[in-house]
Image (cartoon, rainbow, N blue to C red; front, side):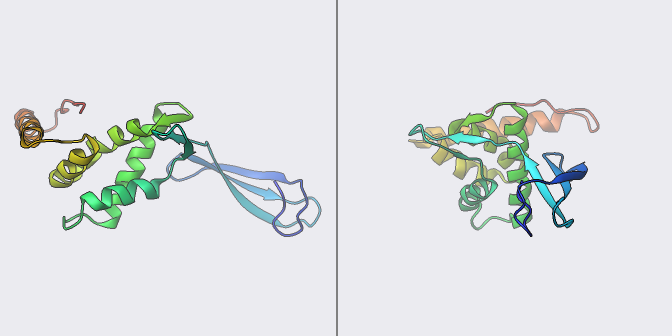
Amino acid sequence: MYCPYCRNPDSRVVDSRLADDGSAIRRRRQCPQCGRRFSTVETTSLSVIKRSGAGEPFSRSKIINGVRKACQGRPVTEDDLALLAQEVEESVRASGVAEIDAHEVGLAILEPLRKLDQIAYLRFASVYQGFESLEDFEEAIGTLRQQAKDNARVPSGAQRPLTAQ
């Protein structure tokens, strides 16, 4: 780690802490040459493997931009999108792999988006899952209705069943 002030290639760690969401480590460092202090943030690298086979770093902003299109005209705020992207990243990182297929990232988006806004979910799913007919939409709507009925039957305070898409 180069000192940002004098470019000395050495530094000493003075303090280490977990970042707010626990996904990174914040380190306070001191340069032995100039004595100045600076902070670094360390995160694990996570690569997304695209259909072409090329890899690129995971990006919350790409999640937000992709979902934003589905949420156009819906009552979804930028904060909602940021929380969704964080939830997706946490889900993907929890899988414990350093490289994840882009398709898996898309699947990780579906459930949080369904909870956020069902219309946006249908829009995203229609493109992501390649709906080709009205029957595809009807099936997705039927699944949403069934999940709503199942959730309505669960008494308050009890855990609701998790369903995969």
